[in-house]
Length: 356
Image (cartoon, rainbow, N blue to C red; front, side, top):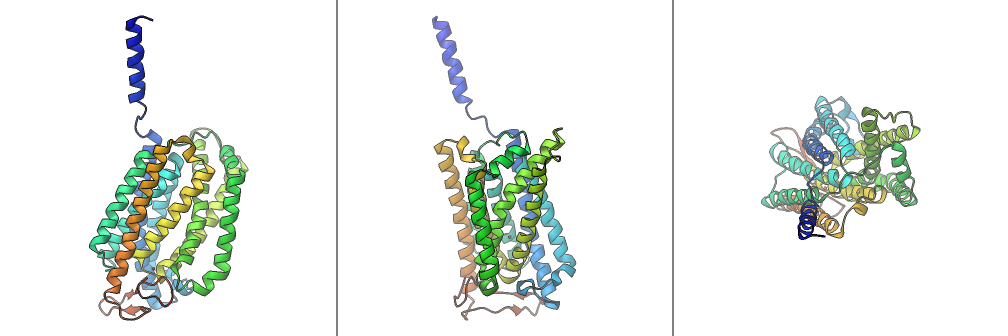
């Protein structure tokens, strides 16, 4: 090999090395844009739905005690439509990008929800709450920049094969068992005083719904590209799981929003839902198999940063309500100026300051 050939080989090697990271793929970028749009609509929907729940509760049975008067409240339906638009964007995002990229973007919905709650619902946002929002943004950015590329899938049958592997079947069985125990044993007794039971049901069911949504999104994307997936029973099986899971989430999220403070419901729901969804995605789609240890550790650090931000939002709300609280369990009361119901923060019975 001549000196010229050696130099050319070295240059090619350097070019290959420098081009090892070529930025986000076009599919990941589409998923990112759709995910950000989804977070905006969903964050705003929390506030609109909460206003609708309050108005409905003032004239009928509250959702928190099993009432459904909110179904007759137009404002609640505006919030629901806003959430549906956000969920459609989220649905499309999962068809293009891995769950480990799309799901953490929900941190933006926390920020929007907290800011709008501060402005519209007068649920005060402390200065440390702003810091919490900033941490959520930093953590989300870190995850987005290091997220894996979307897995190449050519048929919904491939997704079905992934969903029926022993590891994911075990995870799904555990989730269904825990959800049934919560719904039939713990929620009737402690749902009104412990937010974790309502949110636990939403988050556990949500992790399964996201996997089914992703499978259905991939099926529709392939169908629109000319490879019809609607002829396979697996597509309709995933669609059925999506319907059941979404209806369950909606029911228990309404109960949580009506019973507890929005600024605390949103971050707790986000943390639990995101954690379980990433776990489910890692098990089912094996996202981390396509990444090196550095990328995985960086993503974990980004997620921990987001958790820190949501923790700050949570504790900030406790501090604000605690500074004006004098009773162990703050009852709901009516504001004479706007006739809306306000509530104190309570995660469990007999604790002073503890609520998407």
